[in-house]
Length: 288
Image (tube, rainbow, N blue to C red):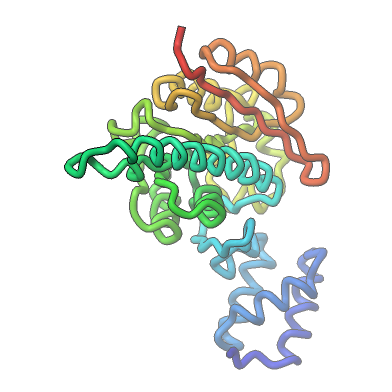
């Protein structure tokens, strides 16, 4: 229980309004709950008024039913990414059910000295994971998955370890992953940066100043990192495995072209309420 007084909260609202915070009342309430005392509250209000994302200031974000711990300068999970979680959850659930049914049939004939067939769990990878929010949310909805995550940014990796525990690696795309995952990934969340370089300057200051450019900048048309990821994905996905990535509506045509060029099957999913568009890429069960 904090020692922040109502008069302090009222003053916090005024300061946030002056700074241009549209939802000053709501944000002051969040800051008041997170602050241990008045001195901490004023420091948080100052940081927020300077444009730092609220989630970085308080140290967490509530996302898809889980509380994600955040650190300064780590990408803040977006509401629109709920579509990625929904699609990944559906795929992980389906593969888990099918695996369980298959292993149950095999176990009827298994000898006592054979490995437990149930050890073959659904492998999910959160690539360019940031805080690990996407993988964390999928694991919350599908307990028992074999979850791995990776990012090139040391701050993001440290934050993801706060949230996920083990199996978090640092490095560039698939180069960060252990070799034993090659050809075994069932669900690949690749929420790579997809903002075109020329558009970075027009992003809100919260993102442009307080989040790493490596989590935002996708190159000339926003798809440089996506193309790099999808071109390697076929070697890392299990037969029938699924890659999911967030894009803009303007990127649908070139993104699907990149998926086909990599030998994967593309599909587009959209949620108007979330203003979200996701491209998926499926590896065939049998390679030609």
